[in-house]
Length: 104
Image (cartoon, rainbow, N blue to C red; front, side):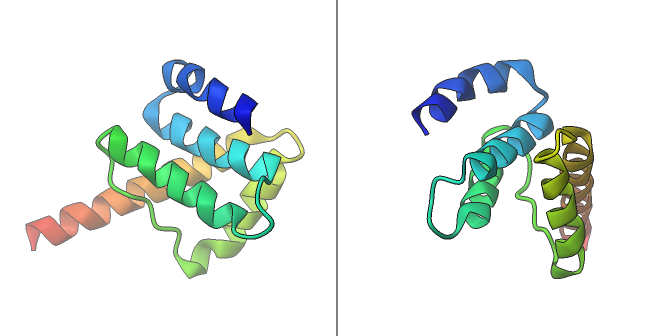
């Protein structure tokens, strides 16, 4: 966990804010530091990163849960791109939803 926390500043400088948030999520889930709730904690950490960079929180709807888990599973096999694209997609959809609510 200490190594993960120590790498956060480097991640923030190395990645676009959306990629940074997704990588935080992926890294926390990968080290699996808790007995239960690792994915929930990772989503909370990801959303904190989004908020810190001025992005809206990202909600992964139940209809996309299978896609989320599949994309996350692929990161464990070396494919980060699928997960990054998934997170970018739900980030985009969340932003559209917030804009729709503000316009209404």
